[in-house]
Length: 426
Image (tube, rainbow, N blue to C red; front, side, top):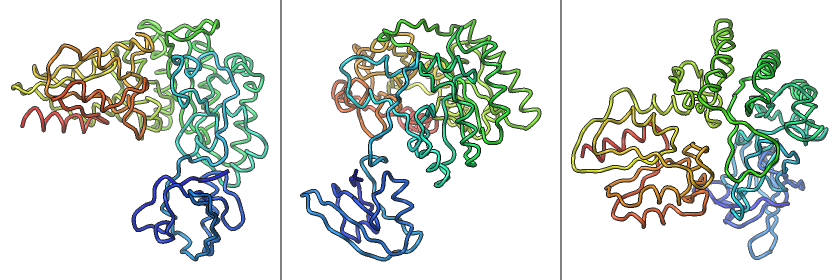
């Protein structure tokens, strides 16, 4: 059990103590930290004894004094120093079970760790929480958490998660609330399974749990061509997506009239699939689940701004996008020298249409045979913090393939406009 340092901030306490990348923190004041949460609490003291193991295996005990609010200034290879809690469920819609064979091991890790939920917004099912975990959540007041409910019908939830523990959702949420913990929730909606009357019930039950329940996101199930599960999963089409939108809008209007907030949000894919106008920005309140694809498209549009870019000149740009988002980009940009390129997802299957799941191979295939000066790609298609796609094609390989064209990952609408204005109008 160890916290391995991956980066030292310049001018930090860690640098002053001459800690180095590769050093491992074993104990703080005689206690072994389980994760960066533990470490943060242990380092809150003014007098510290730090047991370090250096890269060569030598151990060193460092004693020092610090201000109460002074941080160490080190980053770690993992936020969890013991093992990540793996998901023990076998959900009928589990995306990890639908990835291609022989992909890198990290893509096959199914975490269900409450610490990653608190730190990074990862969704957890609560099925593997122990009494000790609940005590720790309460002690450290780890709030808010992000909870995958999927349905509030215990029997149906057990069926969808394929574990009897799935039926305990009400008791587990009760336990969080007793500890003063707030939480965001999500539903992965499967056609003819947890939609319709079941969705009405789930929304109503989560609404009863306010103010501890902070939001409810409803996202459509995704299915790749690699799914081999015999459990029948149905995806939404335009007609059924419109039905879901109408159903949820009835709740949204009522809640906004009562509280001034929407609370229940639909994933962008529902609107794109239904070819229906996205709600206005204020409808998403403070975008509490934007990382879950809730309001990301509207936010991108708002960041880009209302003014269209429509300057034509001899500088050609290809803008790579998933097939669903490409329609939005075409409405934003009206320039003959800017080509919006919807890329079909051959790797996972053409029903997977989001930009974040595009692979380097599919992007390269879509770009073959054309000429351009600049290629803009969605930054979400790259692994967080690294320049590599899901199929292990690197950004550098993509760039080398289409030299002298420059390749730039785009993170948001503001950056998209800025790059276009700089390059197209220069």
